[in-house]
Image (cartoon, rainbow, N blue to C red):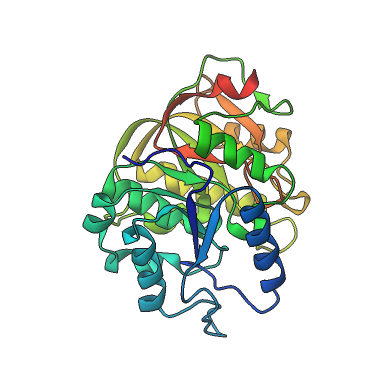
Length: 292
């Protein structure tokens, strides 16, 4: 198992999903400078700026090479995915999971990178981190939340959540971007698990007003695959255009006949609206620790 991140460690930035663009370079350079000033060494994957203009990412072979180089480099202690996109699930059948399993280390990302994280967790049996991609690392309070998790195995409290009063929520926390999770149904990259706290977020890529219905049917699909025994549900924070209010989510749960004794958290700080706390997926936790 890997060690916690420490000051002086090297962090590798790779782009297994979307590639950095010329416009991104301003933020990339700024965030590299901030990471170095914070006391870390920083390196970039060789192909993070290689891009197919149609698919906005590098070729599969180049993305896999950057991923494997990062895991096999003994100097690298943590890997952060550069940005989201649409195509990380392409890579999954061609990754050498045995080598990754022999060289475990911190890997963090979210959105489309959910598929990579869950595949590594499934195949290699070590925890992965749902948290900001590199472009969002220093937005809002993301950096402090990231540090607290990957350096101290701790979570800072959050005060603006709705927490149902049914019972304490304990289990293995897994999840991420819902529409990306659904891409793993029926594949070898989604493991069976019992007592899962399911954490879900998603982005509004639909016409106005359609997100709520699309999210509902995507959640229905994932629950119907019955691969994880869900003992708790956590809904991330959604952008205003999603219309995913607390009342809407409660109505959705009622509409889907979700058992009332399953504990629920709403407005958790994970999502596409800017503030992204880092969560160690695969950890057995009690969610009450976020409500200190």
